[in-house]
Structures are given as structure tokens and as C-alpha cells.
Image (cartoon, rainbow, N blue to C red):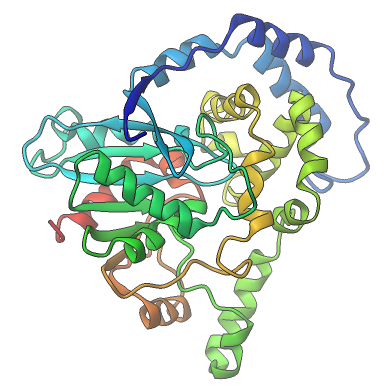
Length: 378
């Protein structure tokens, strides 16, 4: 049960043909009144992207590119876990576990693997390199789906600790954003004697209603501004908590419905761009969507919403004072103050570029920030 088995992606041609056929036979809804994305994904835009997916997107090329990274399966807690594992040739490389977000996959990190593991080839100082481990969260991509309702981010973190032990890594860093920002600090809680530091893309120092009574007038003004963007967009937490099976039935049957859903979320996660593909390559987005389609994981990946991202339900990522924490994108003075209340903040830049999925949007900046944080912790 502790064995590690090599894995390669090999989607059957019949599955690819079926996808193309379904896309070609889509029945398109009329555009509702409104401007741009006011009512959701514009029909004309979605239709154009779907036609590109059917006629121009080259899954086999993307599959080959993914298979260039060594991939494996191993059973942990009764579930097969898929992971990418790329060892650096540099001596004294630091093991680093990266956890993807939702609705994303290990594809999120494909453009940072090279610079992290082989800095010499990318014009970076080879004195700091990383052995990179990128597991697929249970229920995502090629990792087995949870079989009960007890899956939590803390449980995933304990699985990651087992994975790193199985790979022979005694001291390592952990990094993540979105869903990964919940799992990464939980890994420090689960294995503080092994984790050297936690690097997050964001999601730290976020206030809640419980913090309001102690806020100054200035803090309350910042809180009011934050609520404007925190409450925007489609509330996927509410939707997938209430009826995940209902939505999964549609997304699993219709690639157009799945594409619309994930494009909607990527659009909301890139507020500084007119459309998401202005900052994330279209083929990169479609590779992620295609993985959801081929692995039929639109439903099984919803567990963080219906189980709750934390013990007891929804809440921001936990704080931990056991190991240092660094953040790619800092925030307001209020956020910094709250983050320092519950974490050992040693890295808090405020000018880094990018929206939500920074490893996809700004891979060079993401790599640079990870290197800056971990350079002081080896």
C-alpha cells in the first residue's frame, strides 16, 4: 500500500471524439439583455471558445506536455493520490510541495516547475533550487474522489505529510493559493517539525464579522472596501453547498456547461483584466477544463464547499505560529495586523502583479517571490 507507481496521462481517442461531437451539437441559449458579463458568460464569447476547443485546441499536444513531467500514483488513507514529482539536479535543493486551487488542477503550476527545479536553465541563481511535488487534491484530476463526507483540508494536509515522508523528504516547504491556501498552513500544523515555511498566494489576514467590534474607524473603512469585492461574483460556496449533485449532473454531461462554469469563475478571479484569457493563455485554461471533463471530476471536486473549507464549515484559512509564513500578495494594514495576530509573518510584499491564480498569470513573479521567501529559511 506504500508503493509509488509511475503514471502517464493517456486519454482514449474515443473520449476525445465524444467531446468534439458534444461540442459540435451544442444547443445555444439566446443572449439575455444586459452588457458584457452582467448576466454571466456571454453566449457569443462562449460559443467562440467552444468552437476553438472543438476545432483548434490540441489535447494530444497538451497531454504530451503534461507527460513530460514525471507523474505517479500512491495510495494514502485508502485513496489513490496522483502527483507530479520533479527532482532538481542542483545540490541542496529544497523540497517544496505546491497545492493547487479550485476550480483548478495541478496544471496551475506547470509554468513554474522549470524555473523552480532548474534555475540555472532559466537565468536564475542555481544556489537555490527546489525538488517540486504537486499532488492532485482528492477528487481532482487523477486523484481518487473521497468516498464519504468526512474529507477536510486538515485531512488532506495529513495526507500530504504522509506523501512527503514516503518520498523521503524530512524538511520541506509548502505553498498554495485558493484551496491550497487552506491546505498549506494545515500541513504546518500537521507536521511542524518537518515544514520549514508556508508560502501563500493570499487569503491571509482576512477579517470576519467577529473582528468588527475591535476595529478602529480606519479599519472599518478598509473593511467596508473589502466587502465590496469579497461579495462580488457568483457565490460558488452557496451553490455547491446546497446542491452539488444537481450541478454536477449538468457539468458531467455537457462540456459547454462545464466550460461556461469554469470560464465564469476564472473571469471573476481576474478582476484586473477584461477577460481571463488576456492574462492567462487560452490553451492553459482549456487544458484545465479538459482535465475536469476527461476525469469527470466537476462534482467530486466540490467537496470543499459542501463539507466546508475548515472544521465546522466555511471560514478563512487558519493561522499558525509554528513556522514562518510568507505571502505573495499582501494587503491593507488591517489585513497585515490580523495576519500577524495568528501567524509568524516574515514576508509581506504589496506590489507583486497578478490576480488570483498568479502561478498561471505571472509565473516569473511567482517563482521570484517563492525564492525570496525560502532563501532565508534553508
